[in-house]
Length: 345
Ligand code: AQP
Image (cartoon, rainbow, N blue to C red; front, top):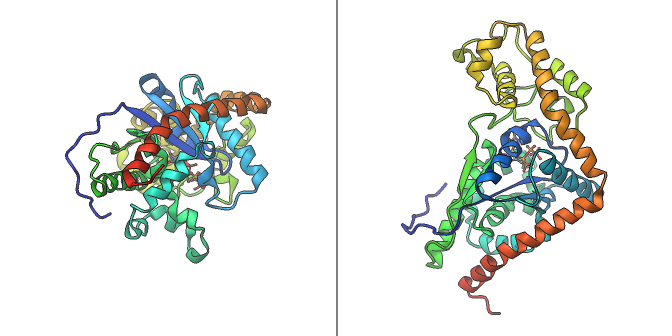
């Protein structure tokens, strides 16, 4: 990333937290441990906005009815995981036009050279890059707009989003430099968890757990039944050695390290504590403990999601109210950005 000269004018607005998740499919344990679980305590400390990023979702093809269902499923997951829509602003991005409008302005600030370095685009577009949508390429600029429209100062994300956050900071800084408006935007800080910042596939400890992985056995979905959870953990790949008991072993044993990290994060304890208790056991014994813990955490979320999804009008009303509150925060920032750029009206 080209370094953008930093101006030494601090941002003086309020602290604000924003994050989002795509409505591209079932949320999984990686989304939960890497991001969603961490959203909840932040609401005690800060003004929080959590969106369902449906504009981002269509950067890859989404069947319209499935997109609508997935949008509601993510909203339900937010609430089921413990977010209170009275305290946190929960909404879907497409209901707030400021995201797309600011994204256009910021697209004209971001440089193609910066965008070409984004590893997520390279991963998602794969070899057939010419056929990827322009939206997929521009995804990180829209993400910068999501954050900067609210002048959010902190963004809880999994480790895979770190590069996009750095880009958002560079875009904010270049906007302020180009238009000579120091301190207009904050330089948002990623909040990356110490635990489970990168949950890996259950079938390959070197690949990230992902919604778009063709095999459902690679991930635990928040909608999975107890039986599914048990089955997936039973089949999770391990190695022939017993459960590790020392940190030095973890580097060469990615699948074992991943299971230990998941178990630790689900129980809010350290990997060291898990190794002290389970080190030397067989994986089948450890997986039983893991299954019990995973079900005890995930089953209540799943059941609450089902209840919430049974009342679609209520869920849509919650999203509508959230969007109204979000529009009220974003509107003055967008109006000011337009004025700064020189737009009339
Ligand atoms: N495996 C993961 N470990 C930790 N955190 C993760 N996140 C995603 N996967 C992991 C975090 O979850 C948040 C929401 O992600 P997203 O839905 O916006 O998009 P994503 O990162 O592209 O998630 P997926 O599941 O990998 O989707 P696909 O398969 O569509 O690419 C983010 O904070 C992300 O860091």
